[in-house]
Length: 160
Image (cartoon, rainbow, N blue to C red; front, side, top):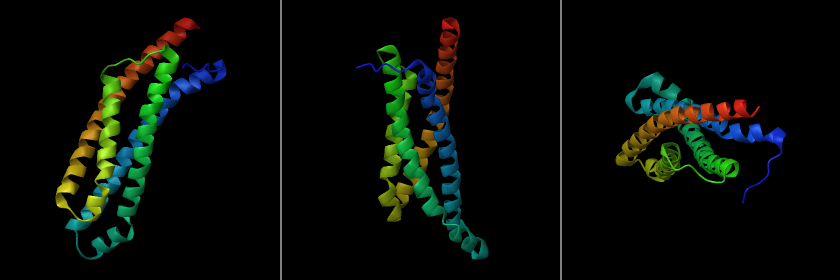
């Protein structure tokens, strides 16, 4: 089912996904920084350790991760919906497959949270590894998304 989007809103709808995903990438980088700060607690001592604990990086990291998961799934679903609505089909290629993979990696990472809270070191290592891979794929996803934006802008300029 294709929904007719009024012309004034068509551009907004078309570019909502890229803007959301760029914001999500920035959130992921910040969440990674906060997670790294929380991880530093394990290797510090004394006043520095007390200062890190007082900042409650663990709580902030968990909240940022929850928001990240929601935005990642919303971005994946929204991107597919807009593409289908604008074109009547999905373009199965690297951008779509990587986006679905990112949604999976985000869910996998979040799913490790109960094990992390139990102090399982293997879960912590897996969480860090999954999120590192996620950031790498997300960076590549941003490049392919930029290429798609360029094509959309070219089509819009030809139509004008």
